[in-house]
Length: 357
Picture 1 (cartoon, one colour):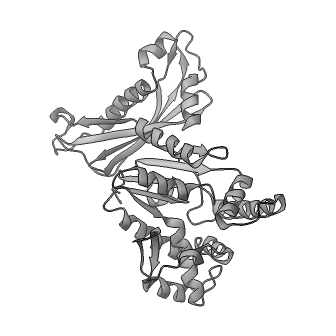
Picture 2 (cartoon, one colour; picture 1 turned 180 degrees about the vertical axis):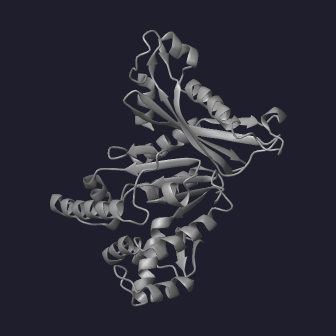
């Protein structure tokens, strides 16, 4: 079972032209020591090299494709114009933004061998500095354990306008409609592909930035990062068993400690909920163990209100030690009227937190 060192990753996903590349670049610039990685350009580069190799990205020959990948080296290098993707010692630059390459990238991204190789390279890039990485499956596949996750989107029309501005195109209604149709088609292709489809991670912060400036988008993300609830806890000797590791059932107590802090961060406590006549008993608890915590370890517990459906509330939790994911899981709570014992709707503030997430 793979344990990922992903606390130092900010994962930004979203469809084409949602502003995630610009947002990721500016966010990385705003965080001292952070490094920006554009994974979309890597798939474009794979399509670019495939075409030069005489390989059809939409229907590649597996043998030739694997041969190409085995002889490909990608890395990001600093240039006068900023960070550029270098492929086998060359910087394709603007060649990666042609319609032919865009279509090729979408096609080649569905090939499992390509995704496996690029995901491997992407994970290697995140072995050192804080990484701000954007793409379409960063928070779900590449770094499902990233400490910070965002999913950016905008209307197809707004994304078409942005793409045309970026490429210096004609902003006529007809041209915007044409590009919006192309973007919608790519969304459908990316969302329904078998290999790593485009989708929002359960614990990602969703943001429709159709009516927002880039500066407003960055400010929103910085505020979410600043407000993220992380509970640090030093493991006492009493929490460990004869083998010297934390007793498995104690992780549910750690989840409970975190839920207290999550409520406090929202301006509530269990007592205040009870004063309003609401109890939230646990009706389901799930915990997946990936590595052990030991006596005197300092662990970081984080998570969020993930879902409110009917009378139920789901809270996800993850526990890290020095950036290594130890445990992940969730609890489901029923909202109950304390006087009647009957189920009730979740408190409004929880629904609001989930909507804003």
